[in-house]
Length: 185
Image 1 (cartoon, rainbow, N blue to C red):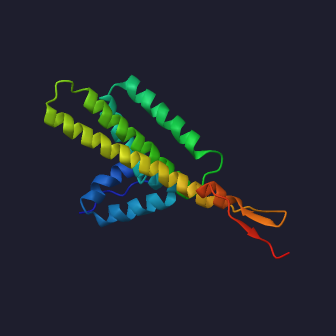
Image 2 (image 1 turned 90 degrees about the horizontal axis):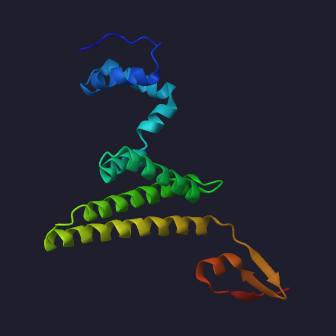
Image 3 (image 1 turned 135 degrees about the vertical axis):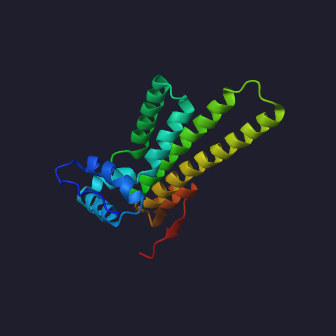
C-alpha cells in the first residue's frame, strides 16, 4: 500500500509529519523516504532522538500540571543549571552526564511536588511517596557523582618536582593525600 510521493519542496519537518503515519503502518516507500529525509537533515533526527529533552518535557508537564508560568520557570531553571554545569568546553561525555543531572533534578522536583500536592494522604501513601523521593534523590546524587568523577578523570595529570620530591597533583585532587617520591636525580 503505497501513498503519493511527496514533493521535495516540503520542509523536512513537514515531510516527516506526512511520512510518519505511513511509515508506522509499514509502508516501505515511506520508510525509505523517511530515512532519506533524516539523512538530509541530521539536526532533525538529532532532535527527535534527544531522550533527555523528551524526558525533560514530560517532567515539566507533569511537575507543573500544565501551568505555563511554572513550566516556563522550571524550563528556565533547567537551562540555567545545564549552562552552569556544562561550563565553557564540555566533552561529549560531560554533556550526556549534565543532561542526566538535569533530568534527575527535574524528576526529583516532580516527585517532591507530587508529594506536597497530596496533604491528605494516608500513612501508607506517605511512605510510598517518601520511598519514591529517596530513590529519586539517590539517582540525582549518583548522576552528580558520575559527572564529578568524569571531570576528575579528564583533568590532565600534573607532576611537580620540588627539592627532590615529586608530587602527583592529580592524586592530591582525587584523594586529598600527597604522595611524594624521591627522585633519583
